[in-house]
Length: 390
Image 1 (tube, rainbow, N blue to C red):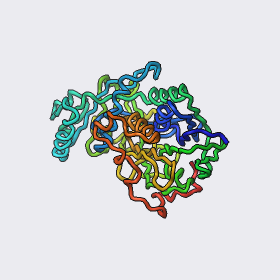
Image 2 (tube, rainbow, N blue to C red; image 1 turned 45 degrees about the vertical axis):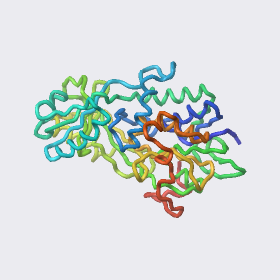
Image 3 (cartoon, rainbow, N blue to C red; image 1 turned 120 degrees about the vertical axis):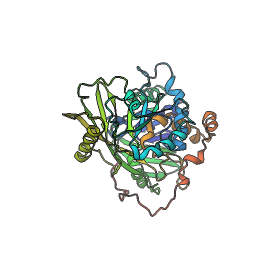
Image 4 (cartoon, rainbow, N blue to C red; image 1 turned 90 degrees about the vertical axis):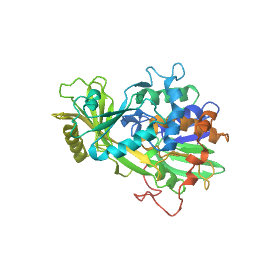
């Protein structure tokens, strides 16, 4: 039995960032079921940092993470975490009122938000068809996130502070014994008084293995593809997304990353791109921009896992001593990771949330699993049981 102070199940962005902070003054072991951390949602994210994305709690977590991303510790990463991009929310005529309402809301966070109409929309993204798009909100301060640099930086920092990352560690059983959680895995047996469930789409499955009531987490598949920009100069284009959540696209290494912004409920799995969603994305891009998709160079899908109220969960389970939930980040995992990791470290230490986060209006209750309706007899939408594969 390998004993430690904190056992983290899941080596994606949530588990890696939590390990980096917890390892400052605790022994930490991270269990990753794949041969490398970040294989699933973390490694398939087209992350954008924007303080206007998500509900109020998500926005506060994002604001609480920005300072670290802008100025990480020396040696944290070989590249800048954030890079210039901008975000452009556009709308057809029937959605003008909804766009105006969003503008009023967003301006409290982004004073430099710019409202554009008609031909001015094409100043930002020239091929946009003004018959399809009549107005847009430009957020100049939105930034690309170098997901590899950020995730890798947290893993590097965790290891430097003494954390151990164990890969190929499929969790087969979890039990509570003598005040510790014991996890039996394909890489051996591990025990700690605190178990952090950072398993993403498999969060409820891990809870079921431990005999802990699930939260009702819902993984949702999102599809993306890479296409050639049809000879266009796409330098400087922002991430452009439609207000009806039917399409977004942005430059990616000289090509266009395109997504139909799908959110299809899925069981926890190695998600694959659905051909119908790929076709929808290509067709919608052509209708909105006139860009002809002649060849799809790459396609993939990932799972974004949501709590029932679309707000991340970070906190101890009141019915299971030492069982800590760090799940439900949805599509906000990268932009909220640092604030959630610091929150996790504080709560496990029995401390108040960091002062900068409470100054933003965050409280432990906003993130606590106790806020969600609990029923020990309930399974999640896909019948996850104690035998489910993690």
